[in-house]
Length: 160
Image (cartoon, rainbow, N blue to C red):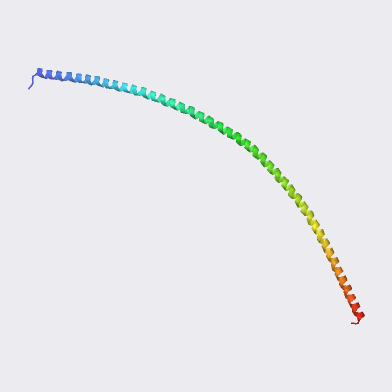
């Protein structure tokens, strides 16, 4: 058995260290949270610096991309102008080729007309040859008839 005085002393002794421990724990937690807050503040500062660097690099890339796109847009405008000029030149050349084809067509039509005239001339020549052939045949028959008559006449004179 314990006396009441000893129990009170022990109880008092136990309470005080628990309060002290809680106070120590509270202080250590406050100190730990303070450290965490300082580290977070440091991280925030470093992250802000990093974001600032990244933003600057992105701004630089944006500027370079804008320059590149402006250059490409200028090149495209120049190409469009060149293509427009080439189209005009091609249209002129096609028109010249079309005119030459029209001239060739006209020449072919003239040649066709000449051949039509030649065909008509050949038809008249054919008719003339037919007439000559008929005349010659009549002449041959006439000469043949005369020869037969003369032969018979000479044969009758000679007494054959």
